[in-house]
Amino acid sequence: MALILWGSITLLSDYIVLNSKKARIVLEGEPKIVIKNGKMMEDVMRKTKLDIDSINSLLRQKNIFSILDVRYAILEVNGELSVVKKEESQFPQKRISICQYLIK
Image (cartoon, rainbow, N blue to C red; front, side, top):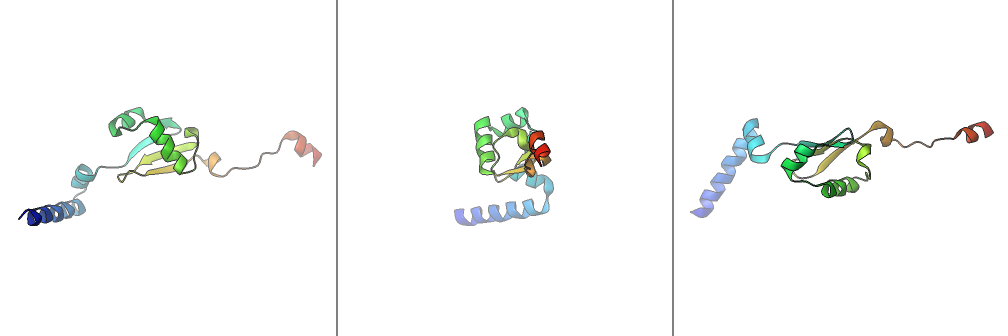
């Protein structure tokens, strides 16, 4: 009896989540912006119970070592961090000094 009840609750909740956006937000949550233009959104971090060390760890997994290089960081529903880098840090360029320019 318990197995039948558990299975029917699971199927019912899956059906509701697939057909209702409001139910999906309530049951599964929604993505949250935790970094915006290089600044941490402290109120969102408090609500999601994240600290600076865990954000830095997630950023390092994406090969980003400074919060200042991030335009947006979005904490997804599944716990992963999606990151949009700032344009100047997306494509590192070799900078030539004035002395090297004059020598050429």
